[in-house]
Length: 274
Image (cartoon, rainbow, N blue to C red; front, side, top):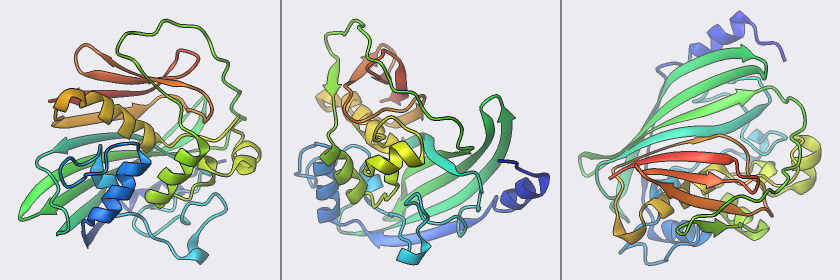
């Protein structure tokens, strides 16, 4: 798909656009999120991994949903026309715990829109900063990178390969029910996560795609074993993960965590500071 200079200029006119939303941080919504990611349900005592993702969910009317299940382009984010989009990376800094059953405000700003073209085709990288404020202080700052790209060729099936596991590795094999529950609790209706005929025939994947944020939440949970509290967590998605194939969660020296695919390839890499 061709991207013109006029397209890029138009999308870059969104840089600096802001959005502010205020809502109560509901205990029950967070409990459902904790259940979906497989963590303990006493969220008022221990908040689940990346708890802020249970709140400020995107809401689009039924007639504003595209064929892929995402809200149609435009609004706060620029109407990038490349057909595929994914949550590719995030950098989070935590300043304090969220106060449940109290109002919080999220202030979002479009920081940058960058166009790239190479062997993989056209790419547009969108950077958005979110700040969550509560009780007159900033609780969390997150800078997300969203990637838009050409449809491209179909993704080949992943062939499992033998590779050595380490003693502290944790195996994770999410089921179709797990993917549905995570989609539901984050109000993410992208069809690649629950609609197998669409995922394979519409977007050319070999199976249902595991949500990047789901994998990030599992890595964050792996990083805070033993009661450790991360002050910073950044991740980048490297390769897709598919339902039905085992994933290893591994922590390396120096605060790096990885989600390793069944073929031994890193699918997501996260850096953690305490």
